[in-house]
Image (cartoon, rainbow, N blue to C red; front, side, top):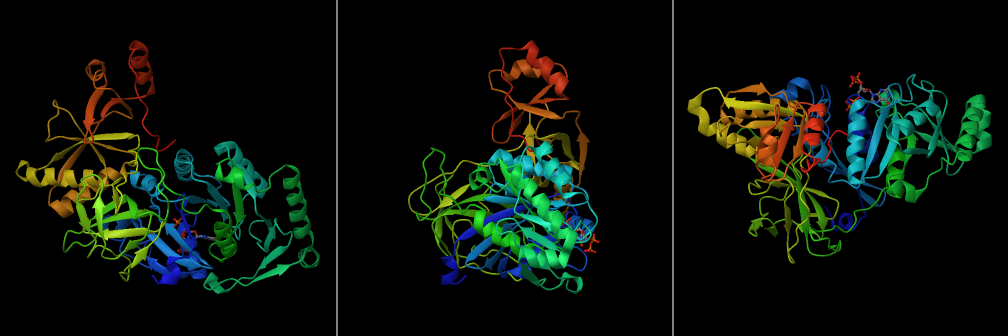
Length: 524
Ligand code: G4P
């Protein structure tokens, strides 16, 4: 990155959506509008699409999904934009949630025909939990879909955010002519290009011109816009930042309609990286010494040698290639001499990075998710929550002779945060219990143990669906309750597992003096 880019203001965001809503298409459309600076495996490798280092697992290739996630960085106008990728698969893992700890805003992408879908809702809950402001893009307006007012109603009733459209479509879904820009009152008229492969030409029309060219379609848009204004559904920056409203844009990612409007909107209203708060509640100024938080660790990208990549979001200061940083957990210096690149298809090297940017540290074996690294004055940021697991299973090595590999593999996957590992004296170390937010995490564990540690495993699902944290003094009492088990997570936390909500409620009622602490909700 050049010095000029270094000083440009940042916007760091993620797109949250249900599979097939158009996230990859939108990512490519954004890249088309912008000057791509570096890419870290952001776009997943569907057939015929760009394939990236994120396609590192056979499973991923088979399914055409992206399990790895990283960031795409591009320049737009006078800004540098970081688009942090969320994995696109239907199942859930903590990975998806953790990505959202590295962004300052989210774009909720909705298919105009389908409206809000389950995964969008889950991801939205995480944004709410983290206080991340959410912008909404209603995609695929070029295809027949729902009524725009009906879609707004659904957003308001199902997620409780007040939609405040910034644009309003001219032409029903399936006949997308352009949008009414609600801030200026003009129309932005779109023209199709073959296959949407190039930037779609846009023309700004005055209301009179729009009326002449688009007749009743314009009149309808105008009426609805006035209706919205009368209803108080206009953008309010404070309410947006406070998570009470969501600005809405209409688009067709495939035809490149509305994409530049989205970029301009991000620059205008999405928050810039803010000074972070450390574990003691102190704020560290953005221009202070370098500091960053690891939000994702990934191994095995290169089957030939076991490498390990830690993705960190820069919180303060400037990251410079080759600098020696301190690992806050151990106090040990950590050299970034060979560990400076944000890996991409073309293995771009990042010379410097600023608050809001994502750096991929190669062979960062000491780093785990939630760790702080810094230079200068020591600092430690709050770790990243482990989310409430909903699936539990006992894992065993198929051949007892491979127990050593089994143990090493589990330890590594645990450190990477691929899955939570629970143990008890009763069950012993040979049969740890895996706990996950989504079932696919189990598959990933088994696959990686097989491919990286040459260890085949068996999985025995356990009949639990809920976990609560218990205090050590209360653990024996809870553990004695029927159909309940208490296990210890690697970080020391004691988790009580329950088969269902009813059992949990009964146990709570029977022990009114014991608190069963809720864990951070992943899925809402
Ligand atoms: P995802 O990453 O969210 O899973 O979605 P992706 O971009 O892969 O898009 C899913 C499908 O929806 C793709 O079609 C894509 O072309 C289509 N799509 C995305 N945005 C739009 C849009 O604005 N308008 C229309 N009409 N279609 C859109 P596909 O047939 O599954 O794949 P492909 O063969 O086109 O790649």
